[in-house]
Image 1: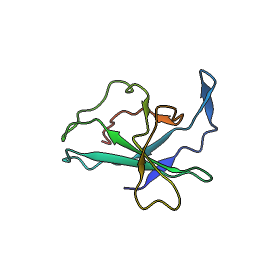
Image 2: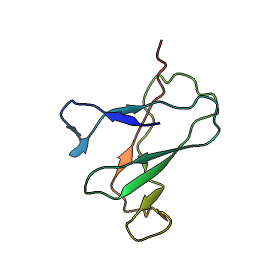
Image 3: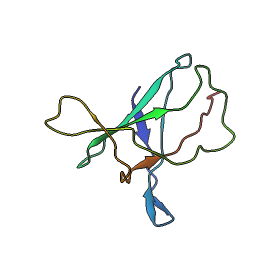
Image 4: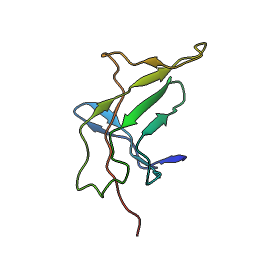
Length: 96
């Protein structure tokens, strides 16, 4: 599913730039991978630790580093190293 980045200006949290966005989730899926593509950056993929039928979240998850990074010229993404600086956190909202 395509996602949207908020039009609000980036903010900072502990000296790091933070962008907000949203993406729809398939509801009954036991495995979810979120790929983030940004200009002038390598593509990054994150495994979302959610059950097949997630409940609404009351708060954000902890920060999670990328699991895979796709680089030009490589046929498969590589595992992200411990020095990867790009992180996400997320929550599940229901649209009513």
